[in-house]
Amino acid sequence: MTNATSQPARGWSRLGRSLKQWFDADYGNGDLAAIRARPDRVEWMRVVPFVILHLGCLGVFLCGWSWTAVGAAVGLYLIRMFAITGFYHRYFSHRTFNTSRTAQFLFAVLGACAVQRGPLWWSYQHRHHHKHSDEEEDVHSPILRGFWWSHIGWITSARNFPTDYSQVRDLAKYPELVFLNRFDTVVPILFATGLFTLGHFLGSWFPSLGVTSWQMLVWGFFISTTVLFHATSSINSLAHLLGNRRYATEDNSRNSLLLALITLGEGWHNNHHCHMNTVRQGFYWWEIDISYYVLKTLSWTGLIWNLKPVPRAAYENTHRIPGTRNPLPGHPTRP
Image 1 (cartoon, rainbow, N blue to C red):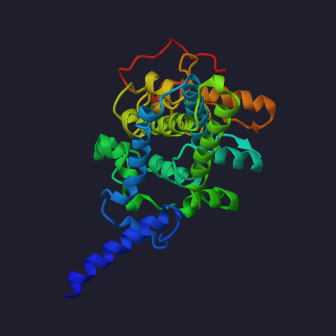
Image 2 (cartoon, rainbow, N blue to C red):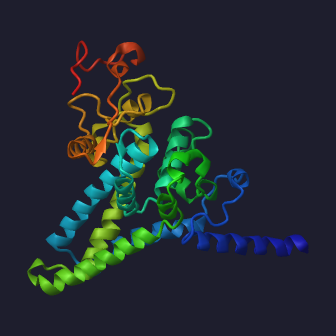
C-alpha cells in the first residue's frame, strides 16, 4: 500500500520541481551525483517549452507577414547566432579572448536572448562534451545515442538540466552571470515582450511598414528562435555525422561548409575539436568563419583583446589522417 501511494507522490513531486525550474533553474539541484545517476529519458514537462516555441511559428497563418517582420527575423537570427558562437561558445566555454566585465555581461544577455539557457550551463555542458566527445559520458553524441537524442532529446533529460558550477568556477565568480544562469527565462520573456511592444509602436507610428505587434512576436521571436535552435543543435548532431575529417581526433567530429554558413563558422568542427582553444575555427582563408571576422573587427575597437591564434601545429601534417587530401601543398600563410 505504501508503494502504491508513493509512486503518485513522487510523480507530483517531479512535476512540481519541473514547474519551479522553469523560473529558477537551480531549484532542486543540490545533489548533483544523484541527479547524474538517473537514467537518460525524456522528461515531458521539459518538452513543453519546445512545443510552445514550435507551435508559436504557426501563428504566421494568423498574423501574416511583412518585409519588416521577415527582416527582423533574419537580423535577429544573425545577431543571436553570433552571440552564441562568439561569446557563449568561443568566450565563455573556451576563453579564446578577453573582454571587460561590462561587455561580458552585455553579451551574456544577448546570448540569453537566443533561448538556449544560461551562459554557465551552456559552457559547462560544452566543456563536458569536449572532455568526453563521442564517449559514453558524452550526453549528446549521435554516434552512441542517435541523431534525435543528440539534436534535442538530451536537453529534455532531467540528468542534464543542472549546472555544475564547480566546472565553471572562472565564470561562477561573477554574481551577475550566476543570476542570468539561474533565472534563465527572464531575458527570453523580456525579449519576447519587447518585440511585441516594438511591433505595436512601429505599426502605430510607421504604418507604411505594414508590421504588427503579432508579426514581430511570431517572426522575430518564435520563427527566428526556432530556426536558431535547430541550426545550433546541428553542430551537436550533424557535425559528428556529415562532412570531412582533416585531423585524427579521437571523436567523430567533422568539417562542413554548409554547417559553417548557417552557424557563422561553427561547421569547422573537426578543426575545433583538434585545436579548441583558438578563437578561429576556419583555419584556412577559404574556410568561411563569419564569427571570427566579427570578433577580429571588435578587437580593432578595443572591446575585446588577446585573441588566441591558430597554433602552428594546425598547419602541419602530424595530426592529419592518412590518406586525406592536403588542401594545398606546403603551409599557407596564416592571417
